[in-house]
Amino acid sequence: MSENTYEFLIIGAGPTGLGAAIQLERHRGNWHLFDSLSYFGGLAASFTDAAGFTWDLGGHVQFSHYQEFDRWMDSALGPEGWYTHVRESWIRMEGKWIPYPLQYNLHRLPPQKRWACVKGFLECSQQDLLKVTIRNFDEWISATLGEPFNDLFMRPYCLKVWGYPISSLDHMWIDERVAVPRLHDVLRSICLNEDYKSWGPNRTFRYPRQGGMGSVWGNIGGQLPQERISLNRRMVEIDPQAHVLTTDDGMRYKYDYLISSIPLDHLVRSAPGIVAPELGDTLVHNYTEVVGIGLEGQPPDWLRSMCWMYFPEDSSPYFRVTVFSNYSPYNVPHPGKQWSLLAEISGSPYREVKRDSLVDDVVAALKRDGLIDDTAPIVSKTTRHVPYGYPVPFLGRDTVVNPILREFEKRKIFSRGRFGTWKYEVSNQDHSFMQGIEVVEHIVNGHEEQTLHYPSRINARQDNPFPYPEWRKGS
Image 1 (cartoon, one colour):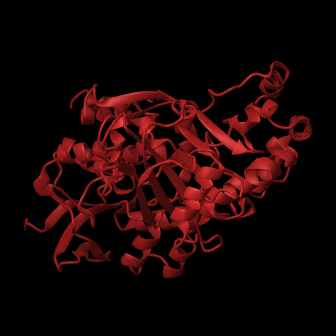
Image 2 (image 1 turned 60 degrees about the horizontal axis):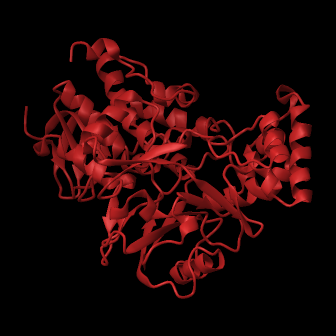
Image 3 (image 1 turned 180 degrees about the vertical axis):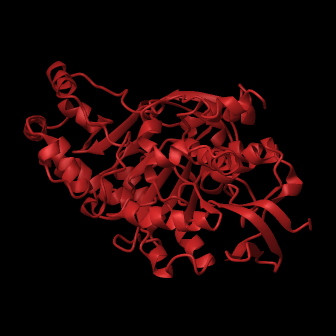
């Protein structure tokens, strides 16, 4: 066997590629991993700006649906390498702060809007959803949460997150992503004037003490045999008939199986002859602009316990702002003397971002929203463009994506991960990592991939046991 022939090639050193490499190393497989970047982590990587502030490529936090994922996270940083937080997230609208999720905290709204939302909830509770025609996400929201709530919050906020109207989104991906409240809890909050903040799988989460979220994946990548890893080497072409991958330095690598976590539309273009190239063009995604603002001093007292905040109104360019120094004091170069805010802005061909003025626009909005004042000593302004932000669950997504995946698998090419499967409902770090592990188990032992094929089942549970206990007994 020549040095350029492998049983498995892996494209991408993010969570999915690293999960696949870990499982192949357990099996003592003959594998090699490529990434065009010089570091591990992919979209979960971190970077340090010129002023010494640490930033992630978005407001990343870590929570899990899998015990196996948790074990690897523990091993990556050790028991002392994490901070654990109780989520405190808020919504800025109507000139005030409202605890997230809004549907559980309507008592904070003005009386007329509060009643309109409750009336909508009541009307929804009296109808049989099985008899309602639902064609898209917009209609799903109106049918489950009511038209007033949809108009007040969901339509404007989702447009800012996705970059596309929610009438152009499918609704089969919801799972744990949208809180559908019990009427009992809605009315209780209103009658008792009581905040409810504990909904959701990320109500507690953890974050690395040092190095940002990327430190996790850097440490995991560092535990693998480095001779099996080629960073700074980009795949430029795949010959699916000859099972040959070519990199940007002209090297050719023959494989039996290929596991890819690059965006599926890129894979379609890179491996001609499997599906029609125009199918890749139908896959919809947005981009994200990350703006980091580093400041001297300390945040005001009311911000010291906040995690992140949502902004549905057009007056704010960002859809989310994270008090990033609250995740870890070591996200700033001088802990205790500085703090930081991370803003996220989504863009798309439908909703373009004004990048030339973006930083100034963000700073001005942070002042209008009361997060910083006019005298705030800003010492760092950092931006990062993320070309692939969210895999948009466009109408008919599964009828396009699933056949593409099957055609590639017939040629022993397995596309997995956040943009590899284009399934937003299983695109968190834990989902992506386990997709890498599970696809190896599928190829090697014929096990069914739980995360890819049963996302609702996975998301309905937390701390799922490792799905292959019979194999682990002999490991």
